[in-house]
Amino acid sequence: DCVHNLKFNDERRNAEVFAKLMDRIRLTEYSDVEFDFVAYIPMLKKQRRKRGYNQGELIAKKLSEISGIAFGKDLLVKLYETKTQHRCVHGFERFGNVLGAYDVNPDYDVSGKTILLVDDVKTTGATLNECSKMLYLNGANSVYCLTAALVNSKIKKES
Picture (cartoon, rainbow, N blue to C red):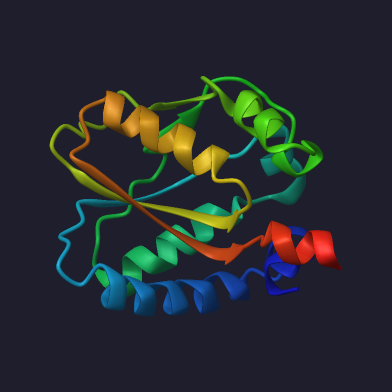
C-alpha cells in the first residue's frame, strides 16, 4: 500500500520512510562497501509528466541525504519509451521489454565506481538487471541494488 500510494496517490512523504528503512539495510548488508553514487531507474517521460515526479528518484535523493553518498541525478537515462513493466505478464516479456532501453548518462564517468542502484519494487529484476548491465558495460566496478519492496510471485500465485 505504501509503495502504491507513493506511486499513484502523490504520497511523496513515503519516499523518506523507504529511504530510512533502506539505509538501515545498507548499513547492515553493505556496511563494508564504499559507494560512489546512489542512482535510480529513470522512468517514462510520459509517466513522469503525468505523475509529476519519479518515485525512485525521490527515494534515492533522500537515501543520498541520509547516507552522505553522492546523488547520481540522471546518472542513468532511458533511451526509448517502453511499456510499463507491470503490464508485462511473464518474466521473459519483462526482460525483453527493457532490453537496450537504458544507458549511462555521458556526463558521468562510472569507471571503477561502486554504484548503489535504487528502485521502488523488484518483481523479476529485469529493470535492475538491465541498468546494472549498462553500468558494468560503462566500466562500473560494482553495482549493488536496494528496493523498497519485492513482489513474491509464489505468494501472488497462491492468493
